[in-house]
Image 1 (cartoon, rainbow, N blue to C red):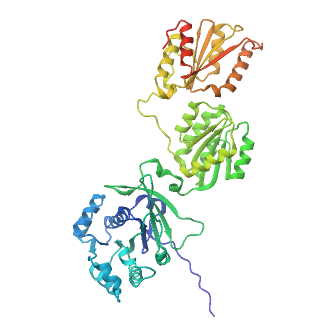
Image 2: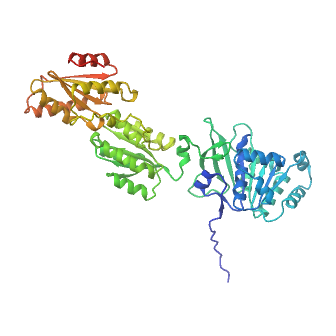
Image 3: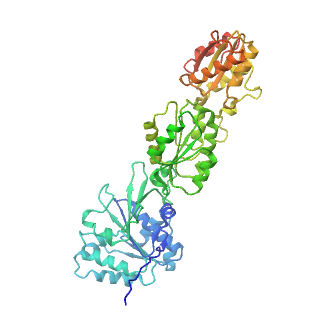
Length: 516
């Protein structure tokens, strides 16, 4: 009786390519595989081959570099890119074999191309772990399935070594020409190198046998003398395609209440594969389970902005997902600043439009997660640092109020604020000042003073067109303080700095205070 055998293939062993971002993301290259580094003319492919060889000799592996440069030339170039190969060559760990000037012409015309590989075997010797061929086009050029190309790939498969060969394509092409399509399945995979307009390049590992449920991943790289191909030092390295491990269609909604929270949840669950939580600690727990969120949407009313900032700061180090904050309320610029500083990638407030919100989320996911920012040492841009030491719950003297206006006006990031000129005979001036101080946010730098029968309120980061809800609440609180009487006689004038700077100066001057 015969029985059918069942083959269970173990995961292949891998070796590090020497390109750190690629190794960290993908685990390296399949041991014993043959890979092509495909790209337009330029140093990137050569540097990739050198990094591959350098990684091997650093680990004590016997390696072979086949090149069209002379020995001193190739060792000098390697050193310039940050890879000292001379010591490995001197001790015999690295073997360097050069093409003769007429190699390509003679090899292509040869009726016995296997003789070329026999000569290469003889020069290199046994026991190789890595082989880099630059330019590999010397073996693989010449159209569909040439004798030399077929013989070369047969030779690579006989080796126990992992092979990396470079292949040049014309202009801005990022894939093999049609004449070389046969190489797609004749090799283990291709590293497709593409130059970007921002000066970086990106590499995509495209396997001959794609894995079910996985797509080719693209990683951004920076080519830098002295270090080779490395992770970019600038923000573009955090683009969506660079992050890996995320699902661009998967969203975590952190709903911290709000007027339209139910509608937003219904929209989010229809537009994305969405998980919904209502507390920041639940969001942290979700992210820590390893969920592949492409985006995190934090929705909160104005009164919950601080919780939103805390959630942002807690989530940012834990996830590569893009974070977007949204509020139906018109929040202050200082709130938006805190949210962005905490690591949010975008911030929307006031009258949400779901089409715009969806577009912003998708754009943020594509662009990629940004790191949280820390204020520079000695930077005096946070409103908290401007709170006067002699402030009593936001109440300050007229002189301090004027000094604060002058000081903030001199700092570009703090020069946008509103000053309210408030007068109401229904309350004594001291009671009016106290009532106003109870409604402002002193931790954001808001201050209140009185001058004659008027009070002045500085609202840091507020803009006139966003103050409607605040003024409505303020009138209601003042009416309560006055025993519920009508506020018909209450006068509130809004002056926006720097647009209304002359009127603010006149207000301060008219109250007997030296203008700034």
